Amino acid sequence: MNQQTIRIATIVGSNRSGRFAPVVRDWFASKVADHQEIVHDIIDLAETPLPSILPAFRESISTHDEQLLKAVSPRLAAADGFVVITPEYNHSYPGALKTAIDWHNAEWRAKPVGFVSYGGISGGLRAVEHLRLVFAELHAVTIRNTVSFANAWDKFALEGPPLNTGAEEAANLLLQQLTWWARLLKDGKARQPYVS
Image (tube, rainbow, N blue to C red; front, side):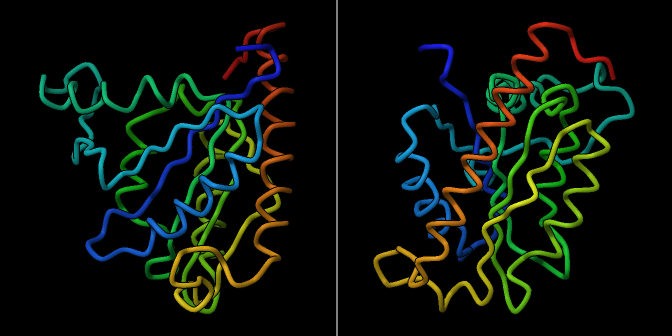
């Protein structure tokens, strides 16, 4: 792996039965594959169970919960940046995604986070705006540009690719900005450790 390589973890935030997330996940993964400088890790929360109850002190977690965290925590720590794929549920983001975020802290610090959202008329943008506040509290840098699918189930062909080519351009711009920030922050942390 050369110095230009950037590790991006995509977190798929929905774990509901019958979810639309795999369609968006697979399409976005194909866009990431076009960027040779990115090493991509997909963390799908439907396939990555996490402890459901956060203890008062992280040191007091059970052995079972610790094993669950070992499946995801090192992958988040290794990432130079993140993309969160989220639906909008009740004008916000899914509980499983909040659980994944809250179980971690240092893993997010001084790293960029981009968003791909989907939903009804708002395309998941209300969920994204809520997530921006959460990630700001965790010292992450959120990317302004997003990829958003309003009425998502009408926006994809049966085989999966979006019917609107604007999504392709939006994904490429998001990835260009995300890798720019990831390199900048990675280099900055190498020169001087981040203080939180």
